[in-house]
Image (cartoon, rainbow, N blue to C red):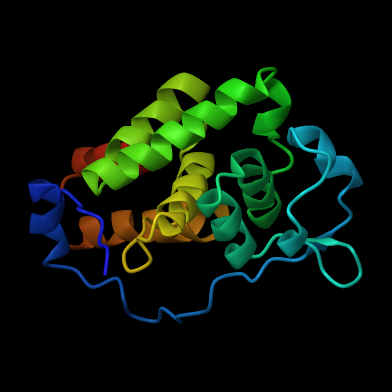
Length: 196
């Protein structure tokens, strides 16, 4: 079983020992995705259509986690990325729209996958996506979540950060707990800045 190597921050480890964020958390299955007409999503890929396994019996694209992982696994990088954007409902930012060179984007994602395999970590891949593509933390985390899974790291991939839960609920809850347990406000602000 392949596991990612997570380098844990000592300061975070110290304060997290003293608080419990698990109270009231309901574990839910990952969003299964939905179906889309492929016409508006064909501009984002180099091929004429998505791989056959991405389509439903009604000939609609299915942006399921399984299809995203399969696309990345078989190096259909642009297809996997477009499905990730659909799955994560990130069409408003449309990061692919601003990439004129699809070949370069494909190459960067291939390099990210290779880096994950070589290092058992997403750290260098994260830096590549943030530096070379200027993606948000949300876009980067969702892409690397599925990219890591596509390389066999199914046990402990990074969390696919979302605005609705992680940024708007989880991070503020962390800050509340930090303050409640006597950590200075300056550390709370730094924590929010580092993670948000």
